[in-house]
Amino acid sequence: MAHHKSAQKRIRQNKRRQARNKTALSKVKTLVKKVYATEDKAQAETYLREAVATLDKQAVKGRIHKNNTARKKSVLTKYVNKLAVTE
Image: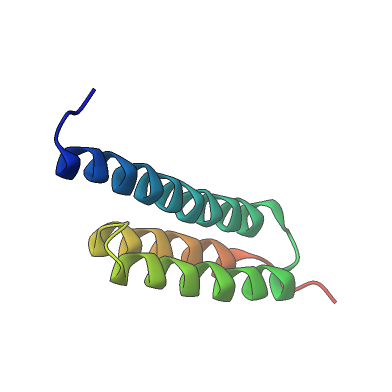
């Protein structure tokens, strides 16, 4: 256990940040799964826009590396573009 006041504060800060990061990354994973789960192109495009927006936000905040974000967006976009249009 930390004895210095500053070390105790760091422990509290790290717990808060860990929880915030975990929530954000979990949201990204959920949105990516939603894109892959749908076969309807229109619905997939809606989910894709939401996923891309969330990925970009997390990259700006430094929770995900920008190249990792770019790769995920590229793969998701290719997947959605391959889906057949169902009417």
